[in-house]
Length: 237
Image (cartoon, rainbow, N blue to C red; front, side, top):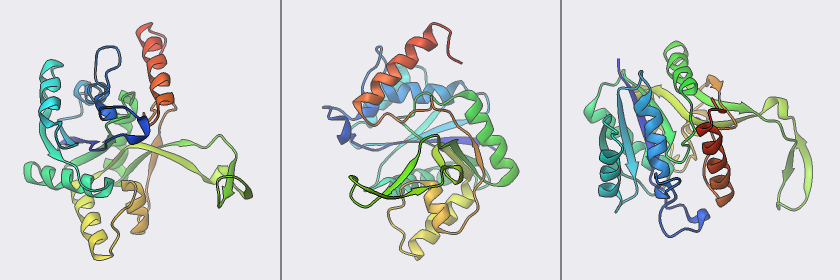
């Protein structure tokens, strides 16, 4: 059984307001996507990496992978019209290259601080329970609103978890989910965990980290830069 990282880097990053896709923005002379790939390259349990990449940037990614010695990268495929379709494109490529019993870790290309422990926990939990969703406790009060201005109620935060990635399943289960979504006309589920939930699946969670930040805004970039500086000073595990 192999463990394959499916890295989703097909977005244009409009909320970042930059001239290039956010996954290719360089921080400390290295593109964000390479930090992400390095986490899986270095992990001894990960056998291969597939990247779903925005069109026009495949050759750039191959060049960076060669420069930074990402030897586990075996294929780059194009993204779809939304996240669900992009993930499906990657899964079809994995199905072409690997076996349906292999384990797939689906991860955001713009979560570069994913830890070795999170990756390991995903693999172990998926093997034991058939799924693994990285998640963290919800520490904030959660207000309900219709207009983003006024609130009309409160969610019980003790019953909420904030999901991250990786989100990990056997390839066979993921292929089933996307086929079933097509039958049920589910076309724009925002993540694999939401797709599985829409299909009535019970999901098993593993502990994530506040450091496993998704770089969506310029504020997130500043947080990432600060985390990198701390890590270089050997203060961050």
